[in-house]
Image (tube, rainbow, N blue to C red):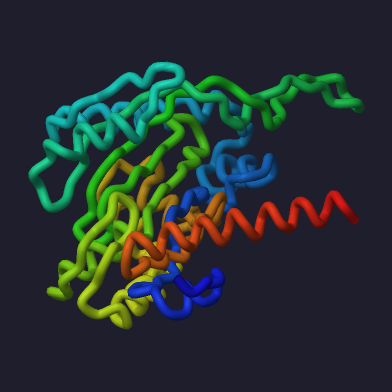
Amino acid sequence: MIAQSVADILTHHVKLSVEAIDRMYLNVYVPLLQAEQGIVRFFRDHRGQPLPSAALMSPMTRNFVAALERFVAQQQVAVVQFRKGQRKDEEMAERLSKFDKEEGVVFVGKAQEKTSVFRTERRRSPKTGAPYPWIVRSTAMVNHYYFYAVDRDFGPFFLKFCSYFPFNAKLCLNGHEYAKRQLARHGIAFEALDNGILSCASPARLQGVCDGFSAEKIDGFLRKWLRLLPHPFTGRDRKAGYRYDISILQAEFSLTQVLGRPAHGRLFFEQVIRKTLTWVVQSRCS
């Protein structure tokens, strides 16, 4: 057998090569409500409360939780109280295998998690000595609601809401699941892996689909599900600029390279190991 380098194998024996965003974990938050001054403006200037305090947040939390519970009851969605250390993805995989709808909420998970919150601190005026409430940032253990769902265009995902003001959330999407849905939608034959694509009738179109996993499409996806799920802010709040925005908390990227035969895979890893050992020996010797 003619010795082949890693470069030779990748050049001559790769039958499918795709670059894609794999998993994205996104912050979902209202930018105007991430600092103490913004909280004060929300209650004092927007809602007309002369003395902003944490007491004004509690009714909003109760209303949001009540709306969440009504949604669960009306949609007849199972609720899972997550245990400490429980693997949430495994719970989703098991329930997803029995889910027979093209789109919808598979189940809702609940968990108490430590998060950043705002509370009221009592202060006194240095001039008059009169007490007054002051908004400060703190932390607390708060219930979070995980909406594990399936989207017809994006596939499985979860959207996690904090049940306490300012109701920050997290969104988790998978770029490979998005690609699979788009290929199926356009009638392009492919063979799927658990988290990837093994083969595709049109690699160029597959790469185009992966490249099209854009910020605009993700934003549109979020807006869609914010309309479908209970929303903690009123229409008046949203018209005044108190709308959710997105930022990237974590992004994972992948380069999938499928070799033509198993033998090429063994050669590839043998060459990688050989090069790595050679580099380690040379480094120690120098």
